Every structure is written in C-alpha cells, then in structure tokens.
Length: 404
Image 1: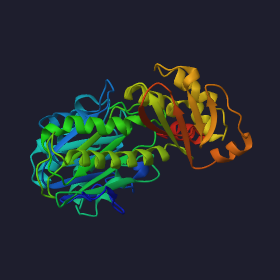
Image 2: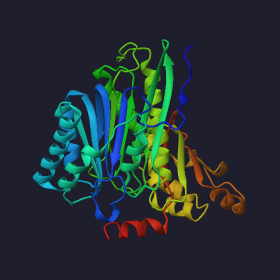
Image 3: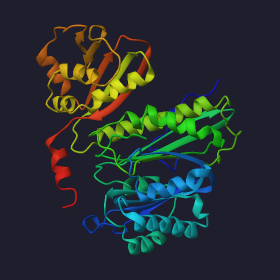
Image 4: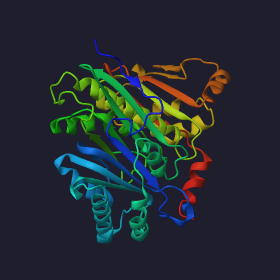
C-alpha cells in the first residue's frame, strides 16, 4: 500500500529535488524600492512544463512570450517581476519580455526558448529594463530561495503564499511544491494572479494538458476576490524528473496520486489567496453538493463566493441568507428553489423554505475568520467548492490609491 499524501512543513516551490530560486530588489517601482521585486526559478535539468493562461482578450506581453516558449511543453527557468505588469504596452512590451528571457537564458546557460516570463503589477507602464538588466546578475539561486521568490512576486499581498506535499509510489518519494500571488483583481478564467507549481516526478508531455487544466478548474478557477480578471493570469507547472522512478504517462498507476498532490497544493494556495484578498478580514468557503453536473456545481459555488452582496453581508456578520439563494438563482444553472438546502456555519437557514434559527447565535458564528456556506442543490450527485473573501471598506481604499 502506498504512503498517504502528506504536507511538507514550510514547503515551497523549491521543495522538490532539483529546483532553486532567488530574488533581489531591482527598484522596478520607486515607491516600493526596497522590496524584492525580481526573481528567478530554475531547474538543474530541463523540465516538461505546461501552463494555463488568462482568457482576457488583451493578454500581457510577458504572458504571450511564455505561451510561445511553452508551446513545446518544455521549460527550465522562469523569470518574474512585480510592480509593473507589462500589459497594454505594445511592441515595446513584447521586446522587453523577450529580452528578459534572453538575459536569463544567457545568465543560466539555458536555451531562451526554455525560459518562461511573468509580470505583475500596474498595467500600462513600461518595464524599467535598465534596472532589470542590473538586477538579474544579483540574484543568488538556492534550495531555500523558494520563499524569496514567493515574497518577490507579491504586489498588494500582505503574506506570501507557499505550499508543498509529498506522496510515495514504487519506493520513490515525489514532491509537489508551489507559490502563488494575488490579493485583488482576481476572478481567474484560466487575476492579478500568478501560480507556479513544481514537481520532481518524471512526467510525459501528454499528461500536461489535462493535468494542468483539471487542477486549475478545481482550485484557482474556483477563486474570486472581486470578479475582476487580469491580463497576466498564469498558472505554470514544471516537472523535472529528479526524484527518479518511471515516467508517468496518461495511463500510469501513479498519475492519480500525482494529480491529487498537485490539486492539494493548488487548493492550499487558493485558500491562502482568498484569505488575503485586498482588505479582507475573512475567508469564505462555499461547498456545494447535489449538482446535476460538475460544471453546474462549480458555477453555483463561484456565483455565491463572488456575490458582492454575500461578501458584504459576511463582513457585517449579517445572516442574510437570502442573498445566497439569490446568487444561485442568477448563476444560470438549472435548479429548483424548493429542492435547495442551505446552512451558514453549520446552522440550517433554508430547506425548500425558511428554517427558524437563533439570529444572535448565527451572527456570533459569522464573526469567525473562516465562514462556511453549505448548499445542497438537490439535483444530482456532483460536488464542488469555491473560495472568496468578505468585502470591506479597505478594498475601496486600496484600489483608489493603487498608483498614488
């Protein structure tokens, strides 16, 4: 029997064997000049890699360069800058993103086509390439550098988001690690959201399209902070095979274990992203069961998590459960009002009709830092989850002062 999935204490994107990272303060934005803002992730061997990108009609230049470089499902390095998104920057932005990849390829001795690029921050600003050229050689790569990268990719985030997990198969221990950033402008349709996942498992390229998309659909795509989507959203997975063992292909018995580990790390990061939403005081987790289809269950869950009225009610500890039913009703799924059951913090409020509850007790329960909304649609067997946060006055303050 294989060992169960376990979390790696203080795990990060460099927890898998063969990955190193580092960061420096390149002064990409003068108003946050002392903060690390330029980082590298590197594998000591070429990786099989794949990504999911924003569905934004005007994707950023760095994302477009990464999409070109990852077309062959291989990568060995990633360069990320924060502070400036390199979006809506025309041909100059494309040239800058390509130069970043070229500089990293020369510095690390890898093919430029094996360098992915990511940028996050203010849109419409050009990258200060003189500072990036000067900053890249200052980055020192190390096995402990994953946390440096996690901090360097932050913008309005207040904490770094990191996680790692391990599982065993055939006597080999495999590790999956990851980091993510994002606090506002998050409603991934794969926001300003970036996620980077690594593993030391050996994977066949044929595994990647379904593995990455299924992971993102169950995690990052079920996250909403403010119903906004950024032009730079990227989730990248790199597998270098450094742990040894057999190559894991589409029909390999270890693939479900690997997929579970990748999804576990992604969900852990998703919860951390939701908890750190701009101005947020609470994590909101929406659990839906009884969906006629998986798509319907996911759509209902995300509609509730993204409802501004639900988010505002949760900030005020207001047990206004009718707003949850309202969000289900306009989500576009097939559902019957009389079949739905609803509970807030484990307290039943609706079972086809209103259920009496103690208003004061529920208000007290809603004051906790995590709020759980449970819904049974009564239509089928499918389940889904979504994550969000409450809506606070600080969200407006942060986004009214973003460039000032």
